[in-house]
Length: 246
Image 1 (tube, rainbow, N blue to C red):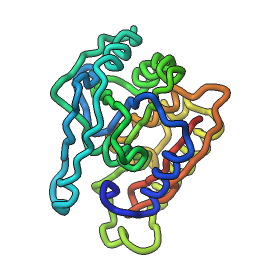
Image 2 (image 1 turned 180 degrees about the vertical axis):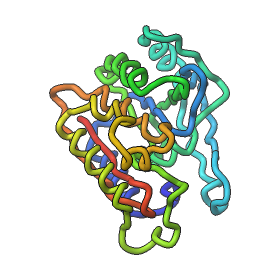
Image 3 (image 1 turned 90 degrees about the vertical axis):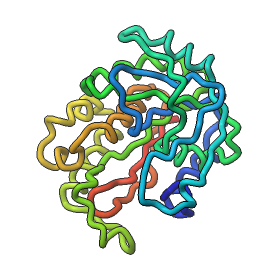
């Protein structure tokens, strides 16, 4: 619903769009494109994908007609040496991408490509793959990891979605530890999330919503300032905590 609502999370995204320099292009790693192997979208005009059900028609009506960038897709493919990157012309922009980017750049005037998550690979693989994308940052490409640090839909408290922010104790514990490690630069503990105990196992029952975080962590350099925003739980078992390096 962040795609159509005007809430504090949307305001947080809009604020970032105003604070950072407008990028030459965007590379988005979304929790919602899992593949065997790693792919990047390489079409001129990516379609807006509505990969969800049971929501208001207004959400299905959203279109985000940003151009693609086959040249950026090819450049990304050429940069990665630890695996073969496929060029995909069928996917497009799923809601993990457009529901965030539309608030950063509402005019849809920044070229954007998506990179998929190889569901067969461990966290270390994703972190090391992302490190090879550093040249794109230097060329003005904004790299976005879109997911949730805490994401357990099976335990969501539907009666707590409205009103005062609410989180289960385990969600608070995991989110606070993650934030501390992000600020401290202890990325190895975040890569080793499966060794962090029960709170992390509940916060990350499956890895796809967590892994996009590792792509952004891998691209932090020593000159970057770290800031956290949208740091609020939702429905007990979700967090909207966001991280910015620039």
